[in-house]
Length: 159
Image 1: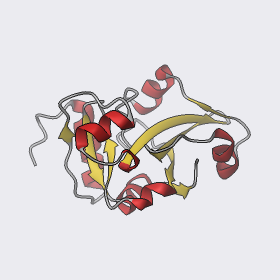
Image 2: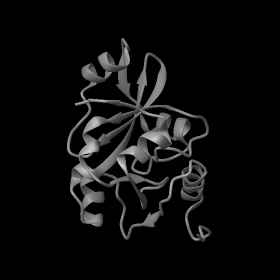
Image 3: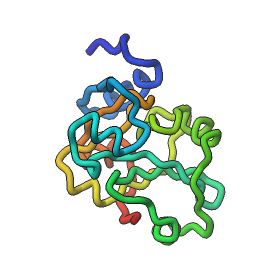
Image 4: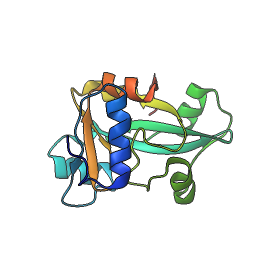
């Protein structure tokens, strides 16, 4: 697979995915997919099949939540599920610093350091889910099981 045409961040993501033994491709979109609704429209899929990557700070530590685009993360539910006292959404500067990627393009992997990850159980309702691939213009398809294996994520209900 020739990846030289992909943005550098997407090349890093794809290397991580392939190194994990998963087979996928990175697709460049004709427009930005900053939101799950944008991505679903561009891909022609249900918004729930978009695995949005949201970064939270839980008791001072980053937690990446891969959630279905069909709902929002409930902070008290997330805090209880992960045993945290305080959970807040990371700001744009924190997202870039921690993931190396910009909001709207945060992939489940390809970060400077591993990030504890939670995978929304409702993503299991879809045969294929789409995640960002390092930029707001790149995405990749994965299975629910592939997403869990890739991220070593904990499956939880987060809404």
